[in-house]
Length: 512
Image (cartoon, rainbow, N blue to C red; front, side):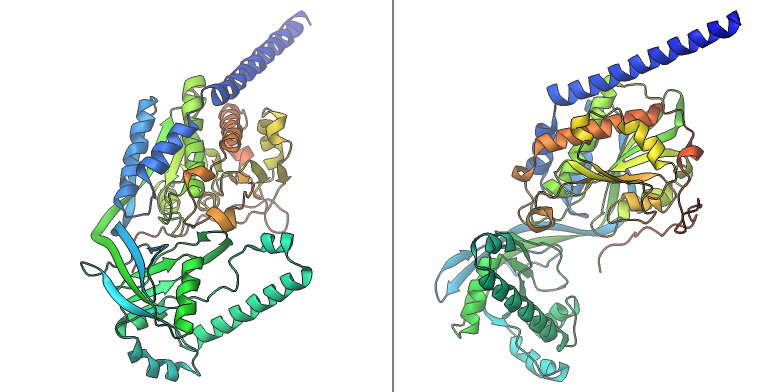
């Protein structure tokens, strides 16, 4: 009996010491995140110093090299790991001027992978894609585009976001505008359909017929914000104008004023280039071959500097690694971070990592991914894992209440994938969780727009997310639960299941 009581006392003392050490580490994480944050300087170096990170561009390569150097400066081993190849392209100057019927410099840019203009630029009239009876009528009209720019986007009936109308307009006026916009959208979709082409093949047909350029405007439904994607033309430039300037040129063309623009669009094809993921790690001391992963995509579209998509996820995970290296330098399990290349074109970097490292997938204790903007984490799903409530609950219980009090949880959640890199790991059976954040008008102001810049970052929210992710990574690293206990997912019928072993192949090529 005396021996049993002694052993029980030893166990209680050990448990108490463990809890005290755990609490001290967590307190140090919080203190370092708040007192010595480097988020602002990291963000400035990445967003302002390097700029947009379109896959296949010199800036993307520069960002990878910068990240490795940054990690090594913190004493964290890092590497750039090749996952494939892509079409190399380098952006130059875009300058667009309305020169008739009056003079104005227009707000716009050439789209990613757009061809350049001839040296000195190109000057031409702008015409609107007209209505056609059918595709035969479109073919008969095509020769008339030779030597002209062609506008192929709908002209919006208003440049004010819906919330502005809702606040100031009468209900009748707001309803009238929305009905008008819906009718215009249907009519424009029908106009495009009657050409017999889609949004990708239509510019190619116009280019082949002799158009000197394509003019688009993909409004994001926010003041001054346009969606910026990629061009499908091969020989002539595609430019995207702001809603305001697109509307101006459209109305001039529609009223017969024959607007003329002068376009200088400089870009350069750089051939096929290698593409990379940046991987950094803090080696585990007890279980070095088991992993806790942090995850964020590194690439962006290049209409702006990719601040909230996904600069905020990137700087958040870099700051988490910096803090953990300082206050938790000898983790129980290895802590890895993946900064993925080419998420925007189909999760290519993360899918390639999963495919290239199949031996690692069963050994990942948990993965935490952040992508959708600058806001505080607001939603976490158990992704269909039977024990998600148990282990995530243990880990989250150590996070300060002011950070977790407004997070909504879904347990066990849906075992399906999603729109970001955690889905690549879910397909391999990894307990991969999305730290989904508050909107901060993400969809209509920063997501894939020309306004996704440093000034849109809400650093207090990102700091909150740093603390959350750092504590989750620490707790997952220290947890006594085995991989097998954590990794049992839930099937569609509510019963435990095994994830499929077959993984989708990573996309290795460039853009045709």
